[in-house]
Each structure stands twice: as C-alpha cells, then as structure tokens.
Image 1 (cartoon, rainbow over the protein chains, first blue to last red):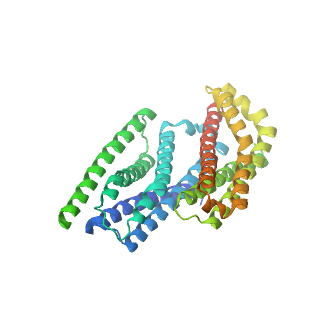
Image 2: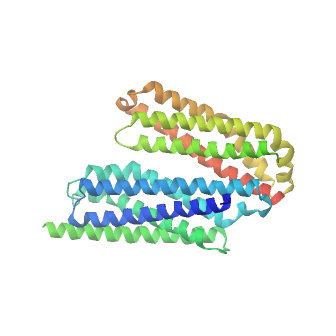
Image 3: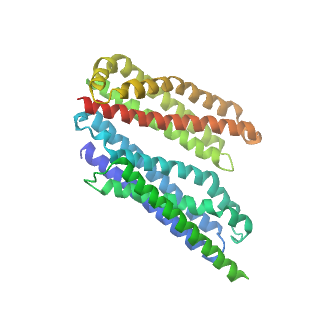
Length: 192
Length: 154
C-alpha cells in the first residue's frame, strides 16, 4: 500500500468517525430529552459519541498533514497547497476544533449538572441555546468537511465556499434553536 | 533534497503537530470541572517534548537547507510574501514557543494540587495552555502557507 492510499483511507476514516459521531451525538441528545431529562446512561453515551468525534478529528488532522508532507516533499510542483478548497477545509476544521472546545467548556458541564433532573427548569432553558447552537455547528461543519473532501473537481473561490458554509451554519443554528425550544415547550406542557 | 533534510522536515511537521495536539488535549482537561492532574501532567510534558523536538528538527533544517535552497524558490515565486511575512513571523513565534511550553510543564508539575485549590492559578494556566495551542495551530497553518509557496516556485 502506498503512502497516498494509506493517507486517503485514514482521511476517510477520520471524516466518517467525525461526521458519524456528530450525527449520533445529536440523535442521542434529541432522543434522550424526549422524556424531559437526561439520565446517567444517556449522558455516558453522549460522552462516548464525543470521544469518537475527537478520535475522528485527530485522524483527520494527522492524515491531512500527511498529505501536506507528501505534496511538499514528493511533488511540490503540483502546487495543491494553495487550492481554495484546501483552505476552506482547513477553516472548517478550525471551526470544528473551537466548537469542540466550547462544548467541553460549557455544554458538557451544563448537561452533567442536569443529569436525572428535569430539563424544563428556567436555569436550563436560559442556557440551552449554547447546547443547540454548538450541536448545529458541529454537525454542519462535519458534513461540510465530508462534502468538500468528496466533491472532486469543485472549483470555487474560497469566499464562495465559506459564504455557503456560513449560510448553512446560520440556518442550522436557527433551526436547531427553534426545534430545541419546541421540544422543551412540549415537555413543559406534558409535565403540567 | 537529501533524505536527511526530508526526514527533518517530516519530523518537524509531525512533532509540531503532535505537540500542539497534546496542548489542545491539556486544554480540554483544564476546561473540565474535575481536574485530572495526572492526565494534565502527561499532556503538557508530551506537548512540550513535541514542540522542542520540532524546534530542533526545524531549526537544523532552516539553518542548513531552507536559506540556501527553499528561500530563493519562494522569493522567485508569485508569493514572495510567504517568506517575507509568513516565514519571518513563524520563525519568531517559534523561538518562544518552546519556552512557553516549558513554562506550562513547570507550572503544572510544580503546582500540583494547588491548581485545583486556586482558581486564579488554574485560570492563568489554562490561558497559557490556550495561548500555546493557538500559536501551535497558527504556526501549522503558516507552515502550509510557506509550503504552498514552494510549490508555486518550483
């Protein structure tokens, strides 16, 4: 197996774990809060999904820099490192990293503090936008990375790709917050 | 490029990336409610080792190969600023990154339990680790920028 094939496979595995982990994480979260609270097992599953996403992220970044080494050392004349798609992917990966850090800083401690407690409390409702927002950013960013990686021959300027990405992120945040608030309101009316 | 310089460049990238990844992992540990001191010590130590290793490999490559063989290519390309701006910035940040890394290691290893008891110390250490992680990411991106310019100059 050549280094190139090894890197392609690793890159695909990293993206699949990241996108798959982010999808599962959102799915588990919305499924978990259906009964109005998150129990210890559900929180454990969320943490497990987060670990899978981090593993995917690390594999993705290292295999990505493996490509950098390959292009720089073996074939610098290809000039692929100034491809706008590559810089768009790097930007998306940067957003994934920052969003992941915010999740560990704000979201997981918040969810941990609400384990086995009703999510309809005003304390959680006030702080819930960060949960829905980071969830939306995570899943949209991972699928953007997946699409950019898979879309051979995509020839658009950096600003167009990032503009479309930011538009998708903005729409995702709005939808996630509306849907999340709807679920909380549904839980509240059920508890009344 | 001889295999020695190829290897030095590869190790420079891998160790730098590994070092940055360990400092990001250390940052994740710092952000959690309960501080896992053992993990924090391991992450910062491995992170600093990675950065110092990258510094040595990159330093030797830079002083013995880059100036003679790579710099002229970049300057002759359409992107001479990749050396004048990016590489010069990268070079200067890279000079103090190992010092910051060692400071983080010493703070974590010598403070021990104090990190849990003193919120101000914990916050300051977290900020130091965040700075190292951000500079590591920035330097990695600058490296991609410089390498890209080499491709344009070939």
